[in-house]
Amino acid sequence: MAVQGRIVWVSGPAVKADGMAASKMYETVTVGNSKLIGEVIRLTGDVAFIQVYESTSGLKPGEPVVGTGNPLSVMLGPGIIGQIYDGIQRPLRELSKASGSFIGRGITTTPIDMTKKYHFVPTVAAGDEVGPGSIIGTVKETEMIDHKIMLPPDHAGGKIASIVAEGDYDLETDLATVKGGDPVKMYQRWPVRRPRPYTARHEPIIPLITGQRVIDTFFPIVKGGTGSIPGAFGTGKTVTLHQIAKWADSQVVVYIGCGERGNEMTEVLVEFPHLKDPRTGKPLMDRTVLVANTSNMPVAAREASIYTGVTIAEYYRDMGNDVVLVADSTSRWAEALREMSGRLEEMPAEEGYPSYLASRLAEFYERAGRVRALGGPERDGSVTLVGAVSPSGGDFTEPVTTHTMRFIKTFWALDAKLAYSRHYPSINWMNSYSGYMGDVADWWSKNVDEGWFALRQEAYGILQREDTLKEIVRLLGTESLPDEEKLVLEVARMIKIGILQQNSFDDIDTYCDPKKQYMLLKAMIKFHTRSKEALGRGASIADIRALPVMGEMLKARMTVKDDEVSKLEGLLSTIDAEFENMGAAIAK
Image 1 (cartoon, rainbow, N blue to C red):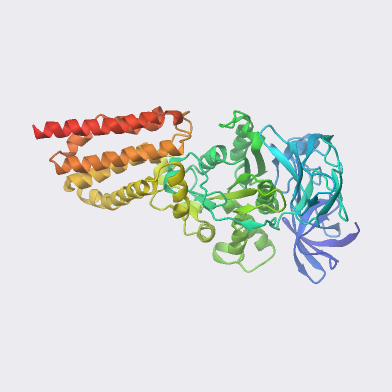
Image 2: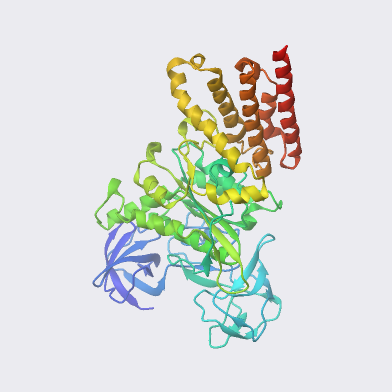
């Protein structure tokens, strides 16, 4: 590498260098005598504008800028799972060994351990035809992850000339050679801003089961779908994201802490390594990648962290895995865009954000999807993107939230009033929506019960009716309503307590199986139906409120385990029996 230019201007993380006519857009460069990592984000003649991913304090005009000739890329291979990276895929554990508690500038290390040996099992033989993305073998990355060794998507492919025998090899070993092509190693590099290619995209019809009733039953998301969780400070965004990351039926989780407070991110970094995967009992980190870029870390790296995370997610998708990527939060990422835009003296749009905010959000969310991967053997994988949004003061009309709503199909709106009343998850059922409801109905019908969709619609109708009645109650009081409307308020209260609320710290309630979700909903709707019949036969709302089964229904979410769903059948029988007794008493 030769010196291409020299620094002529420094403004925070933005640096201007001249003599850069030979450089390219989004090329990675080293900046200054400390060799800080940067990326070219604008070219004007021979002047390059560079965003630097490390602290620029002490940089001065005249220091060299050296181009690498490559775009900002990540290294993809065995050893990523369980790592904690910063925004540009530097392993924080290794950096701490090199520089102590405070990350030094200009420190470089490989993102994964190049000397560690993995047991490679070939799945092709010499003479086999392979193409871009084809699997040539597997290694055991963790106890839960079988890591597929694939040809890079930009590899020409061809016939296998030679391949090593089963055995232990490090990442630099040439595992296979393809006639007329480069040797294939365990790892590959890929530019973070370029989506990894695939063969075909599938329809979004398989729900991502999270075990959270308000999500799965009322506002579902699919594998390969997009979702957003906007909410003001203290509404429970982080805990909700933790629940999704922990319980979603995916093989790999990528958690991006993008610009969050240091103490909050520390809690994630401390907590995740001690969490157990609920399905296998193994450490959750055995299928998790953490990207930590807190609010006190360089702002430019915050912008890159989103792309680093989604590229890693696509890599594991290409192996045939379902991957959930959680970004907390895209508002802080947008603030990084705004700061860099201001440094570059670009014309601001609404609330100071750059005019390209919407297109950048679209580029990110469009990388979600359930796809058929390149190469053989045939395999399907998905990347589900869930982004938290932190609007100032809980204002959902601010630019990041409104633009995000254009590109996502599931919107879980957190409500400060619900959070302050200790209703968690504080997802407001009137402001939230899911565009996947019709897509997942067939799955629920085939795998749970044919009546699921009708029950869900009836329950949501009760919640909507209760919302319209609240204003009348506020003005005139409950007693002004007829018994039929009082019943709506009562059943809506039961749905809110017995279904919409969920205790993430309770051993039973933290996760709810789809069949249990359906049975709880069925009990609520059956109670509503039998109550309407009882009112028609002359019962009073007071008679209905006195039924002991109401207490059993409200407690069922915390007393009935997922493998004890048959107990809920008994609850349905109890509802029938108590209403029969009530009817007999009224007849006398």
